[in-house]
Length: 248
Image 1 (cartoon, one colour):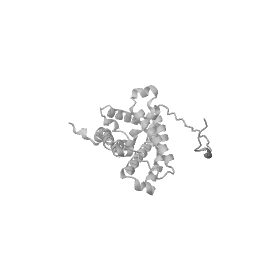
Image 2 (cartoon, rainbow, N blue to C red):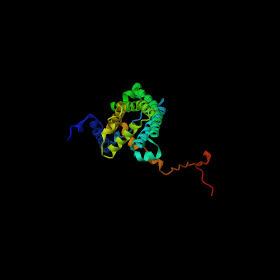
Image 3 (cartoon, rainbow, N blue to C red):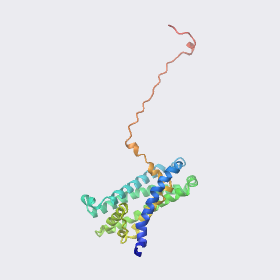
Image 4 (cartoon, rainbow, N blue to C red):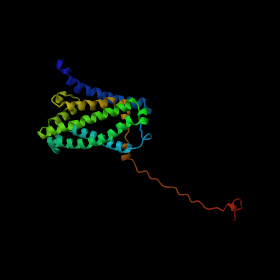
């Protein structure tokens, strides 16, 4: 085997993704099978309610939208995107959506982070994994936002190669023909964001993130629950009539 196979770029972007995905799938299955009592979100709303709902809604809305955008934008075959828009339009859509939803997630995440570390009740009852995973997700989010100015610079020069290279690389991983060479010429900030994002999948089974698997999608398709109130009519009875024989 040629020595060039074991370059740092190949190990990080050709081998490490499969390590993360293997731990993600097998670890999630084992966690569900063996530790059902730990399969929960561990909400801290009962300990402190101020700003919790606002921060949680912004954070979850932003993160879910970002994940959906990455899923569609990176896994859609290039030929399909070419039917809908050209590469530069694709890049501008990614920049716009990433900025909007990234800032939403950042706004909520910052509040949740300071709440997790700064509120004495929540900090004392939080596990190390709770603090670590929130910090890591926030780091991944910030690295993603830092890629936006670089993407704007590329777009200003009419260069969409980074977007297409990222898409080709992730598709090569998913379709089991890893091609880490696509990321060799990509800016360092993109590589750091990718590494941080892959590590989220690696730590996923060992943290509270497993509650994502239990999202109540069934509510969207379930039948309506009809609730009828039971009205009981009470008849006024004179207490002096109690015990008297009934008139027939």
